[in-house]
Image (tube, rainbow, N blue to C red; front, side, top):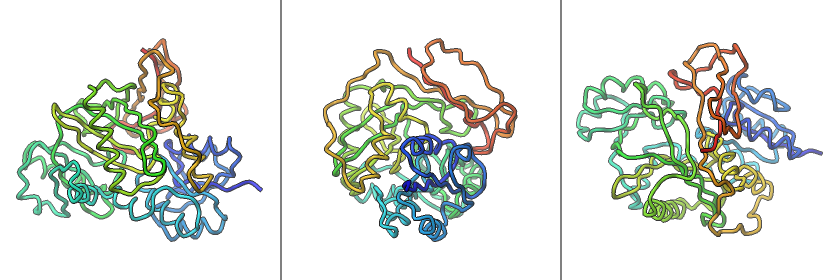
Amino acid sequence: MKKIFLILGVGNAQVDLIKRCKEYGYEVFGISYKEEGRGLEYIDHFKQINIIDKKEVLKYAQSISADVVYSVGSDIAMPTVGYVSERLGTPFFVDEKTAELLHYKGRLRQFLIEKHINPIAFKVASSLEEFSDWNIFPAIIKPVDSQGQRGVFEVHKPADLQKHFTKSQSFSRSRNVIVEQYIDGPEFSVNTFVQNGLIVYSFMTDRYVIKEKLPCGIIKGHGIPAKVDDWVREKTASLLQEVINALGIRNGPVYFQLKYTDTDVFIIEITPRLDGCHLWRFIKLMYGIDLLDLTIRQLERNSSPPQLDTNPTKPVQKQNLYLDFFHQKTGTQFQKVKSEKESCLYEEWYYKEGETVRYINGYLEKTGYQIWAE
């Protein structure tokens, strides 16, 4: 009999995982709070269940005798993955408690302060009045428990807090928002893979965002290898291992978003999963290492696979690579545009011609992406 892989979510971020599981011979089940998403085209079975409803997801997983429960690219899925997997006795990387800590931004900030790791000033509140004493600007306001850059705004004065508070709060299930010190510096991401508590793979990519009169953080693309100084690489390596140690993560992928200034490196986000930007494909093209394969294979074994090679990975590409997203306004009719890159190595679209671009952030939505060499 085929093994059963239950995937939480059926959107664009899950399609790579769904396809790979099908290639590996799994019978793939998918759930989501509504019957919508590109993954529906590829899964074997779908059930309409909200992925944050842990008890209902557990019941469904038990009813189908799921062998593995997992998700990529989704912050809100990871606490449920931990909760369900622990109770089923199926393999998992991060338990419910750790996943909750990483998902709720205020808890993570407090944890890092308590561990004396990378402190950044912050405050969590459920009403605008509670921010009356906040005097650190510029700052970022965002929901404590959302994803996909929803409700994230840069604020420069108290009036900006008032302007954006309600919008930011509307994306929070707990009705809480966080204001935190703005770090002014270049952004980058790091996809790590942990084995037996040690980071054995660490792939750093420059992270580019759209800045033209839009809320902050909407992703434009990535570049690899990252164009950073050696001290940033060294500082980042020690910082991330320190975080992994403090969290007690033993195995699996962990994704970090960071910024650096002239003197230090700062953690912006941490999530115990592969990213939602298809960077596994980007990394594989550059270094020949397939993080998606490693993730599935390690889950399959329900234990650590043979020790991975920890030697520095060398590029198999001689050129710099870039991953660019295509965007369209929310609610418009999708129109495919022709890539202007002669050296395009890979291209994928999220929609078919004429389909309506679905609401994610409400401004510009990702409609596809390309990877090209320079």
